[in-house]
Image (cartoon, rainbow, N blue to C red; front, side):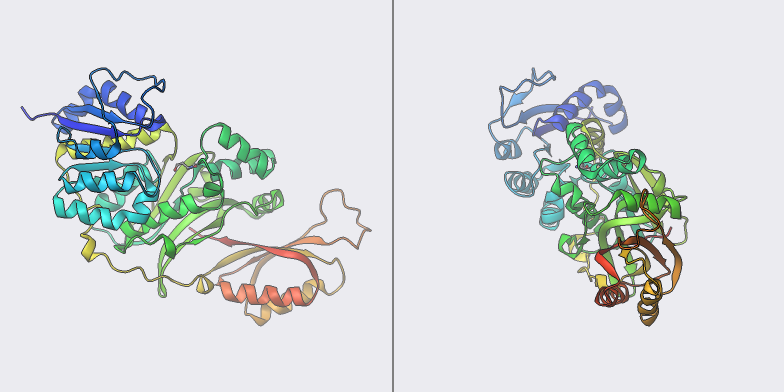
Length: 436
Ligand code: HSE
């Protein structure tokens, strides 16, 4: 008989409580699949008095995360407190240094301190599993780290933030404002405590940095990620995208280029026919372009207690099975430094929305500036906004341009020249296009 795996859980919020429940209700399946029983023997959380709908009888209450991490009764320390620093960092480090395995759902901590923790795991022989940190229930870490260990990856991209996808979906489908949709996302519990973390793209950036490291064998470097959020997206962009055969999604994209590895998070126009464009609401999706094989797209719930707990328990099952994968797929000292490709040299198609003066020669002037930068246009659309009198020539009208592939600095040089020509008002809206 193999002894049960003894688990200690730090953090009993929505996810922690769900993990305790799942280990209890799935006990037989877990033990059949892992070859040994899994038992929660001790827990810790901020408040012991808080009402939780789980049965903690028979489970010890420990005073602090650090005490739990150092508790000799446990084999596996599960960190579900969150936060990119203390107390999670010291507790995880202590657990690893005492040879325990660690399971965490903490993307911020892995993005920031993942290498240091991975080193400790390697040195002391424990596992450091963090499947729930990216895409919750979607097994994307395992896919990159283990499933594709024999395949080179050229690009990994996806919808990694449920809140942003929920907001963009509702704005598109119901014509609602950004603010209204954000409020609903918060009410439904998708958004982070500080919604700027979601809508300004930082949550996606942390997840992307982790995926890029696994995909390209480079050191996790959140600072190498270019980040733009979705707050500038207007309903007219979503309407124009629809007419032009695109949808707007907040994508995290990591791609190997001749100038290095591009890691970028920004609103992106994706062809309506692509797999990623079909992903609606809070759902997440990740596409991996592997060498010599067609793209793999994984779609599923990227947030919420049950989805996150599903991945956490799967990670615990791996510890029970005795699997000790290298946290970043290869030893930390074999990870290469990240060579950041400069964003100004990014190449791709662009959606540009300008508010142009409705006078003879305006389009000609814009086209001349673009031609000077060798930017070729795939389509041009000018439209009077709904309800505007045709005779009212004083108000600017939206002009929408779709470019063929060009470089980012050429686009911005051309648009600066257009602004100097005084044929447009306000700032141009620019959205990058990602082809599949
Ligand atoms: N706030 C995140 C999201 C939760 O909206 O996807 C999961 O990281």
